[in-house]
Image (tube, rainbow, N blue to C red; front, side, top):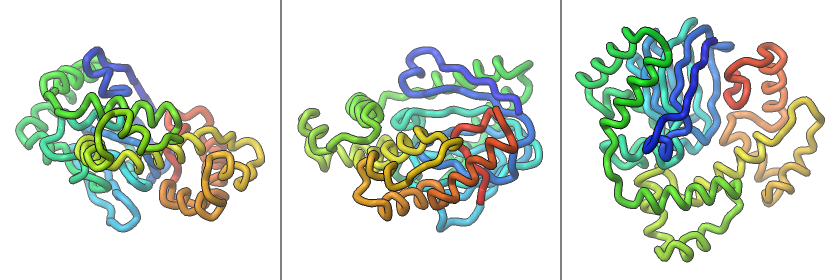
Amino acid sequence: MEYVSRVPRPPLDGLIDDLYYLEGAPPYARLMLPPPGVLLIVNLGAPFRVRGGADTGMAEFADGCVVTMPTRVWEFGYPAWTRSVGVHFKPWGLAPFLPMPAAELSDRPVTVEQIWGRPATEALRDRLATAPGPREMLTLLEAELIRRLCETPGLGLVRHLSSVIAATGGAVAIGDLSVAAGVSSTHLAQRFKELVGVTPKRLARTHRFATTVLALDPSRPIDWGDVAGAAGYFDQAHFGHEFRAFTGLTPTRYLEVRRRFLREHPGHVLDNWPLPAD
């Protein structure tokens, strides 16, 4: 697959991790995407399918999709050849581009058309599809985002506290954050749900899990009890419950799937976090 990525210029760099272009044959027809991950995908190829959580069916997306902070694993079903441009947002970064509170989209992917309307979405896709190359496409997408950027009340507070949560790997007392910020825990939770889609406690839980799992070396033996204890989980059973919620797999099965990915597709551009659907 071809993958081109770059960080946008200010002020978007405070909202976005990177803009990217993706084209080619996916390593597997179905991939799981554990949280955290806030995405906007403008699709330029055949439709793909998304399942936003274990209790929903697969939905087809032709123009692309928008995903706020998920609370559980997502499943992507790719066509044999895929082509798209997209945005990896910071947890708070999508809020200035949404016409509704982020919580309304929690674990519910929607089309780009539902966010920006059909005429604007079709016009953007046409401009992207006729651009001479990936870098020009990313420049076009960046310009569209800058044009749509809106002032968002409370964004500074949520951005600062989300950054603290991320920097600590989720190991921070949310009550202490609200006291330090001079706001009530209720106000803080409401702001986070509006702009991130989940409460700060839920965001911290997600970061704690992601930090723990991304630190694992799948090439080495792993003592899951030690991993759970070092990450601050109450016991291994609690860790196992979190693992299934966030990846759809048991820890042991995750390790098997992760090793399979690395063995079958060494050095692949998607070899860090997505997993083959089990």
